[in-house]
Amino acid sequence: MEEFITLDRTDPLFQNYLLGQHSPEFRAVPVRSLHINSESEQVTFQILARENLSLVRKASALAHVMRLDLLPITLAPALAVWAANFAQRTMLSLNFADTILGALALFCLHGAFFARNDFIDHVRGVDRLNEKGGSRVIQQGVMRAITVRNLYWALAGIGVAFSLPVLVHHPVILWTCIAAGVYGIYGYSQLRWSKTGGVLGGLMLFLCTGPFLTWGAQVIVLDNTQSSVLTDGLFLRLGSLMLGGMFGLIAVIYVETRHMVSLVVDDEAGLQTLPVKIGFDRAKLVLALMYLAVGVFTLGTFYVWFSWVGLLAAIPLAALCVRLAVQMYRVSSPLSSRLLVLLKHAIFLHLSMGLAFGLLNFL
Image: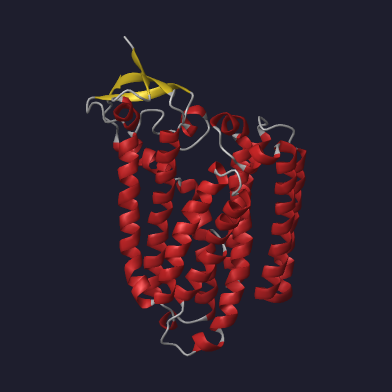
C-alpha cells in the first residue's frame, strides 16, 4: 500500500523530508509541490522503501547528476587549445603534467557545478515543477538530495586538489580562477533569478565557458621556463580568446534554449530567465541572431588560426549555424518538440567545432 504525507514549509520535518534525511530505510519522493518559494509552500511526498541499487544503476545515476553528456561544453574549449599546442611543439616543450591535472580538475568541477545545480533547483522547487528539469535522480528517488549535495562538495574538493599544483606553477591563473568561479556561479544565478541581471548573467556565462577557459588552458600548457612563451605565446593567447568566444556563444545558446523549453514552468516558479522577461518570440529571435554570430566567429577564428585552409573548413560549420538560426526562428511554441532537437544540435555544434579545430592542427 502506497503511503503519502503532505507537509507545509513551516513544519519542522519539512526540510528533513525534502533533503531525504527523515529515514535511512525509506525515501520521500516529492510528487506535488504548491506555492514554491513562499511561506505557504506545501509538498506532498510519496514514501518508498529504499532500494538496493546495482552498480550499473549507481554509475548511471552518477553520470546523470554530473551531466557527462554536457562535458564537451567544459572540456572541448580546453582540449582544442591543447591540441593546437601539441601539434606545434614537441612534448618536451609543453607542460604536460599540468595539462593532465588541469583536465582532471575541469572534469571534477564540471560534475560539481551540475550536482550543485541539481540540489539547488530541487530545494527551490524548480525541478519539482519541471518534469524536464535537471537530472531527475532526486525526483525519481534514485538519490537523496543530501547525497547530491555531498557529491557536490566531494567533487569540488577533488577538483581543487587537482588544480593546486597548476596554480602553484602558474600563479596568474589563481586570481582568474577565483574570479571566474565566483563570477560564473553568480552569473548563472543571475540568468534565472534576477529581474535585471539577464544581460550580466549571459555575459558571465559567455566568459566562463569561453574566453576565460581557453585563456587558462593556454597559460597552463605553455612551460614558463621556455623563452618561446614571450615571443609566440602572446599570439597563441590572443588566438585562444577568439576560439573561446566561439565556444562561449554556443554555451549561452544551449542554456537559453533550455530556458525556452521550460518557459511555462519557469514563469510559474517565478524565475526571471530571458524568455520569461522578453517573451518567446523575441527570445527565439535573439537566439537565431546568436547562431549567426557563432557562424561569423567561426569563420574569423578558423581563418586567423589556419588561413585559407581554415576558412574553407569553417564554411560547412558556418552553414550549419545559419541552418540552426532558421530552425530556431521557425519554432512556433515553447512546447514544440523541435526545441529539444535544437538542444541536441547545440551540443553537436559545440563538439563539431572542437573536433574540426583539433584535427586542423595536425594537417
